[in-house]
Image (cartoon, rainbow, N blue to C red; front, side):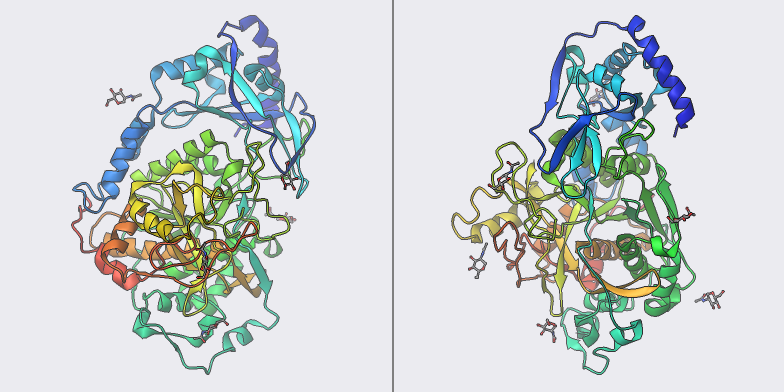
Length: 614
Ligand SMILES: *[C@@H]1O[C@H](CO)[C@@H](O)[C@H](O)[C@H]1NC(C)=O
Ligand SMILES: *[C@@H]1O[C@H](CO)[C@@H](O)[C@H](O)[C@H]1NC(C)=O
Ligand SMILES: *[C@@H]1O[C@H](CO)[C@@H](O)[C@H](O)[C@H]1NC(C)=O
Ligand SMILES: *[C@@H]1O[C@H](CO)[C@@H](O)[C@H](O)[C@H]1NC(C)=O
Ligand SMILES: *[C@@H]1O[C@H](CO)[C@@H](O)[C@H](O)[C@H]1NC(C)=O
Ligand SMILES: *[C@@H]1O[C@H](CO)[C@@H](O)[C@H](O)[C@H]1NC(C)=O
């Protein structure tokens, strides 16, 4: 990153240089325009000297080619299954046309911005330049304002409309931060410190006989698991007791953290001492993305980050774990000294991890935005980034959301189920990235026997069409909906959420040295990811390729092997003043295909025709 002092000097010279070097680039034409964003109040004009890092996306003309490769290597019936693409192959497939690179260069040069000022992604499909607001306004014939969030008072610098020169239009897919008004949230809805000390919590049902669960390891689960979820509970319930990863087959698992959440290592050791004694003294690799924090002060740890790391790494020990901490969050102080941020750090993380030669094969994220607050162009572009990771053999899980069919805000009083498109009609609100078809969206269950947990995010994307891999499963579900039910509230042709589910409440974690119970689909995503990582361990130890993009495989397995997932048929996910969807037999918009049966899945994924690793 550039130092601020250097930056101020550079900006000064840019601004003075600009007028004399201006080249005609054609008249400006509107590139993107949005209605007044719900939940935001327009404040004063942005200070002209505030630096802003513009990200310019150049079109990826061969993306459909990448998508074809992705589906071939992810379809278990295809001869290329598991033959993932290299970093270089993926980059070649998302590279922009050289004319686009040239035209964007010309446009930037006409404002005094040259190669030395530009940061390019490895595939050259993203260009970043840091400029003062006044120059951004000239480049895009726009006006930036300070916008204030009605709920939390956070401020961002945005505009509702921007233009670019007509002859550059087809060479630029989007420029941000402009119209992006999203508010990234962690999906850890419920958190309560337990009143008792840790010993008491575990003892609640110590004497009760185990619960009979036919699909579990040995057909039973400890009685205490109905009120407190531990690593042991999940290994029992999802039939993985006795599977011992070596951690020596090149397998790895990653957890992403945003919003300045970091995972506390002292808490992790307390957690291990109680729930995973053989992991004691082991830790994970910390990776800072764009200055993401790793403040190990005990009182500063994040519940979300602690939950994700304690369970993901606790379930998969000794598979090496990585925690990515990506910077970028409100509050942002709108003065000249503070660079504004995108408030949408997935692209920073994607840029980082895509530039890495060998990312972890399984990565879980428990953060999301309301899909409607993410501009369509941006959602599609970020989703394409997830596809690139899938093509390289990385499995991505995302929490499906904690608001049922609502916007992920667990508080019904502040939940906003109004469309953000200017029409302000009532509408179910799916979340992004879970609505991206190239990631695996994980919903939530509770109790044993398992039922759908009421907050489990589910529904249908308004941006992404339904992919073929889920058409059969989802159309059966839609056919069962009472006629006309929720008509107009959701898009019946959309990508359906979630794909699968896992336990999502009553997880016992350590935070700041104390135990607490926590819930949210935040718990479900790293749990499902952990079992995926164990499946990868089984495959890699037989020199089979990792699973990569999971969805085509998951739906295929479910259709052929009913025992691979525990079908959840009780519960619903209320929101937006409705009772939400019902959990039903087969796929449903609350728990997807169901929760994993590791033992059955392991036998399947290590037995079908596979391409061996080189
Ligand atoms: C896209 O693919 C076509 C056909 O394979 C190739 O000729 C063309 O150069 C590619 N475009 C880019 C921008 O790489
Ligand atoms: C688990 O707890 C739920 C909710 O309290 C209860 O309905 C269910 O019967 C319990 N399961 C068992 C096996 O007792
Ligand atoms: C962890 O480290 C402590 C202190 O160094 C040591 O006493 C203990 O045996 C170690 N535990 C394991 C499981 O390695
Ligand atoms: C961590 O945060 C605390 C409180 O905000 C601060 O006092 C401390 O200096 C920070 N430590 C590090 C290593 O950044
Ligand atoms: C949208 O409609 C709801 C209910 O009619 C109303 O409460 C809300 O203020 C409206 N929001 C906007 C931005 O018009
Ligand atoms: C859910 O199930 C209940 C009880 O069978 C039924 O009355 C209701 O219409 C169902 N709702 C949906 C959305 O399918």
